[in-house]
Image (cartoon, rainbow, N blue to C red):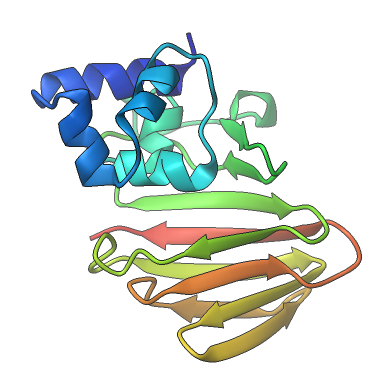
Length: 181
């Protein structure tokens, strides 16, 4: 069983949530939760993020065993990597400590891929920092459009609807730091 599926079931039960209660909080179907918990399907990054937020956890906490020490060497082959059905890869390059409010991620979007985020009610106090290292990232935040190329960075409050798209002709790679409140 994947660590995510195991974490999902354990946390849901610890909080006393039925699958229906969690489905309502996350805005996804009860049958999808059941399939994920039985490790029959891997959710998209969007679905996994919604479930983590509904359980008051970061996605990194759901994907990786939390560390107990304050000095952590995290070799590349031990970093949690999540790849969804769109082949969007998310690598957690920061250690995961219980209650840590920072996530540092490497994200790869294939040509033509996009991530739509309309999570205004679910991200109060959160902050996102982006640094593009390869390709061309188009970010739509509310009605503004930004085009970031290698070396460009952007900070924003993700409580407004936003969309990330690979606007280039090659794989897009960017680093993202998410600060949780």
